[in-house]
Amino acid sequence: MDDVNQPDLSFRFAFDGPLGRVLQQHALDDIAAARLTWKFKAYYRLRPWIPIAMRQLLQRGRNRSLDAPDDWYLPTEFISDWQRAVSHDVATTPNHRTLHPWPDGFEVATVLTHDVETRAGVKLVSALASLEEEYGFRSAWNFVPYKYKIDAGLLDDLSSRGHEIGVHGYNHDGRLFESRRTFDWRKDRINEAIGNFKSTGFRAPMVHRNLDWLQGLDVDYDASCFDVDPFQAMPGGIGSPWPFIAGKFVELPYTLPQDHTLLVALGETTPQVWIDKLQYLRQIAGMAMLITHPDYLDTSRRLNIYRQFLEHLREQTDLWHALPRDVATWWRQRDQSTISAVDDSIEGPAAARGRVVAIDELFAATRCPA
Image 1 (cartoon, rainbow, N blue to C red):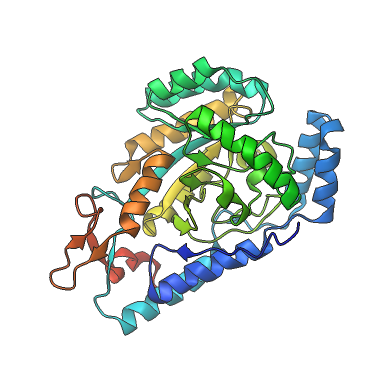
Image 2: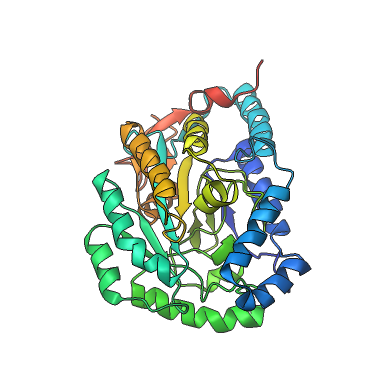
């Protein structure tokens, strides 16, 4: 992958000072490490001839062979660095004020997204959307534009019901970032699909990522990064549970484990991992973005686990349930706003919905012990 890990980008993160330096370092470390091994490159070239059942068997075997700790869904290295940075910030800058990450008095943002990988998955979309609507939620549906037939009526129906439509790669073959030439050829066709779908967001298949090359897409946000996920072909993670500005777009990392990893590969039988991760994100005022697939929520057992999680979300009162496009819009407003030096009021487009908080108050639960 030529020059894949040398982005010529400007970044702006959720917080400044020592906190911002931690966010920047973890993000840049992930960008530098986001590359496919030669084994995965070979796998994706052979993948079209490997039966789906065999692919899933290989994925389960690999996932279960990884030496992942029990708390693999927590970014433990980031947490450690973050605790030190918060303690240092509080000690050196008493009463340091910042804009709260989320609007309207909410403590956490929750974002439901779906990547629709197959023709079979498309057939399950409408019913899954109805399930979410039963609990008062709407979500984003990311379709692969050049793999299966996409019914414009389905997209219109989802949009009319309050859901969002996104674009999920080119044809989901794992080779989008194989070379700059390949990416550039596909980029124009992806942009055509973005226009046809009336989309503002993108997620790369298999969450492969190259934020530099992705600047060529006509989107307001990308959602190909994550805070931590050791089970991906490009493992690692940015650590941070907040969006950040990457060049022209807002980057929205997913922070709740994917359904395939949790329910298929690891065989979890309850939503407890999602619930536990949500509790961590509440302590750090993060974003709880979930990727599920109608392709894998295809049994009553898995669908019931997802239903239980929706029930849990509905019971919470401090969550901002938002679509990705809404989070991206808010994040730009927050990024373009400042705190007045006179009276702690907010100056800028976030003034009507935002609030000013002390770093010590916002991250009290994450500070290192004295």
